[in-house]
Image (cartoon, rainbow, N blue to C red):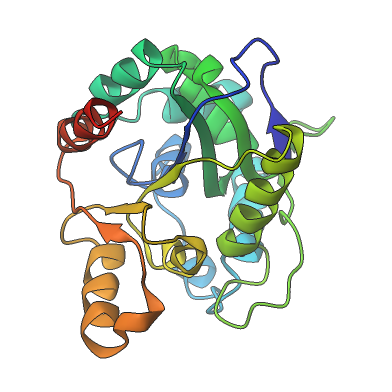
Length: 257
């Protein structure tokens, strides 16, 4: 599901900044955090063991159904999401980007879901900064169960069946260029942490920058690719531990004008 958040933003920003959500904007996985809303704060083994590789969205649908069966109310889920800590320095980064809104367009590309992401961003007071949120649709049905759906179908063999972030990124770049009268973004910055943030790296060019969270899977995998298949990865790589590391890099970009 794509959420279009505001029409009030400047239309001619030079740079696009894409954020993953889990363990990038927030400092843990929102799917793990929400399990704390259960009475015993953990899932039964049978449910944990039912997970199939590449079918995480399907697994999370079962988790949310189980939580509804256990009587976990909406406000408990909302509270579990709202109290997740941001990643260190992330709010500093978002404040910097807000101060330079004329230069940076922001979007979220995440395998979490609309309810978790919007709930957290609204609580943090930063939802208005993002032009689009690309994530799996989720909403409460009449019985009070949070129902999760896949984002899209695609033919990429590397990605989980519900989401290929490279397809999302390429479609968004093409669509925005058209909307902007043929003007492409000068540079794309991609901030992530996980293995599913590797596929969209193939859509980045030599002027773009990948920001993998230091010592997380995305960072380790990109280092392996740089060694074994250097032609596969054209962008610059700047590992980060705190949002302030990214601010330092973006400040230099603004000084280059």
